Image 1: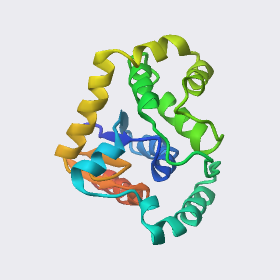
Image 2: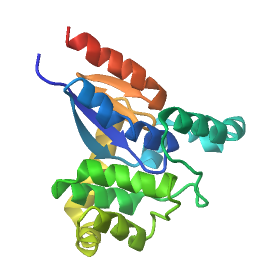
Image 3: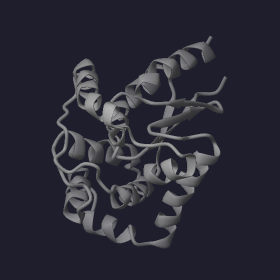
Length: 199
């Protein structure tokens, strides 16, 4: 069987997406799989499916902070709840599409989420996006300029619409072999699938 391809649909506004993003590349590497990072607009997914962000449900919101902290401890990854939450990640995700064209899709996706969820950066601001790009050796201003291009805007919109059509209702959403896995806590099930397909 050919090597697996994991499509990782992400939005930096989601803490569970950040957590999964810290693990997905190493998980894929353990099974010879490839990760394709596909930014999508979680707010639009919620609108299309009638779902709601956990933070908008009082009981869930109360539990969210502790739950995310526990996962970060388990993964041994940096985490601090941002002062600006929720955040509008549209520009950051458009920049991610442009970074992907430059061959840095994975690195930029992981870096922009770390900037928000670990370093406290306001990733809705152009300066913060440009700084993340520059740290990766990219031209931050050129990347920001590309976020205004119709092709980049359309790609983010298409990713979002496609994810919904394929059954997505939250983030992170991962597809492999036509199967959908949703949520950071489903990574174990995704890995189990990859193990099974190699036997």
